[in-house]
Amino acid sequence: MSKKSNYIDVAHIRTEDCEERKFPLEKLKAIKKRPDGFQIVVNQSALNAMKAHGRTSMHAEVGGMLVGYLYRDEGGPYLLIEAAVIGEHTDGNAASVTFTAETWTHVYKVQEEKYSETKIVGWYHTHPGFGIFLSHMDLFICQHTFNAPHQVAYVYDPCSEDEGWFIWKQSRSKKIEPLIIEDEPALPVTISTHSLSSRFMCASADKIVISSEDHVSKWRTVATFISTALLFVCAISLACLVLHSVSVQKELENKIVQLKSEIKELKEENQMITDNFREIGRWSEGFPNPPRLMWETPKPTQDPNPIQEEPQQRRSIFIPNFLR
Image 1 (cartoon, rainbow, N blue to C red):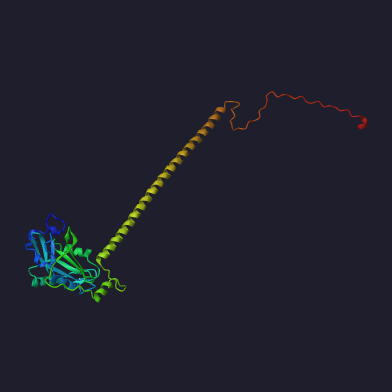
Image 2 (image 1 turned 60 degrees about the vertical axis):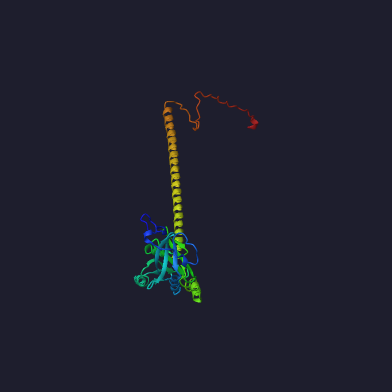
């Protein structure tokens, strides 16, 4: 990879890392012209070995290494996969496979004995019953173990007979179709009763084997999205509540200020009325007849020169004697 690049890509394969050799077009019956760009050329014998290994385990992942050569011609670099080395002593389950120290020791030993001129150019593993993809754990292995720009990954599902090859493209996996050299007949594609039962065993009520790391990651992503959305809604609600409480507080403060202003005005009016009464009281002290206030009850006044009424004379009435 170029030192200026900060991602892994087959476009960054250096010329000095490739041995110049003619493209094996005469061995490829499916095509008549070399395709442009980076190509994967794999021997049928290597494919048969990987598939035969994968069919031995229908409930747990297995894997191994790919050995071969990195060549180039006028069309660019291409990868020739000579063989597959079965990974012995692996720690596999339905969701992942782990290459132990004993696995690497076995791979190096077989490579030295049978394929001494080759290099490890990638790895393979199975996904029994849950499709062709690279899970997060698979990508972790690719990024930390098989991170050269020319190294590839092969995934095989023995339950459905699906398969896929992946190369590096801007530090991401990209699926690509290989070119196959028919050095031996391909294994027959037969899905036996055991394969069918293994395929549907993944969805049975007794043994639910949906243990793909990618499925777990998808559910984890959904849960993270839902929790994030809930947190966002709670934050918006809390912000609205705070804004409403601030608005109510300001409104109450304005009401209090208004009430204080009205109370102050009432006090001033009351003081003004009291001062007026005091002023009127002081002003009326120097007058015999102070001006009557409008709300006072008028007092009866005595006339200083009253009219003297003449006393009525008593009239005498004559009464005859015989009536007395």
